[in-house]
Image (tube, rainbow, N blue to C red; front, side, top):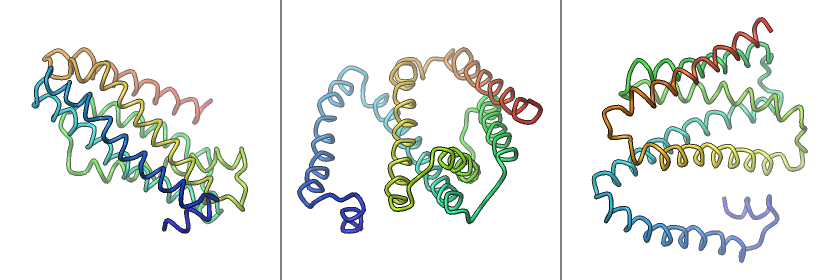
Length: 202
């Protein structure tokens, strides 16, 4: 796999080594703030936060695999679905997420399946956007990987910011779900519903 990536991205063994080293250096750098958080917040809060981020990362990875599949198939023209169908369904998926968060605060066994299905759907939407911008066929794999990395890093950044700003400090409070989670979920559902209405009847 590494030789293929080196050839596709036109990079040498030295850069691959530096990227690998950067990963380990980043891991080492996390130890200091991690120790400070453990000392100030206690292991229970830090472990709960770490488990939450890991769970979110697993869900995002499942969605990434799904939308990579349909994105590649859509860009290659193997699967073609009209934006008039895809875009309202994507908006409806946003409504579903918001409504589910209002109705329950417990993850269900079917959530990974739902996330994977939504990932397949969103990949078709991404394919439509990339087709409009155009993606060079001689750099298809490179562009696909770079696009997916950008999407996942963006999602992880939003989750991390929301967690550090609100979840880490107030997530264990009794009022958090009522005044933060539910209201934010209702807002997300309303935005998705308006988008769906606009795409269907706009």
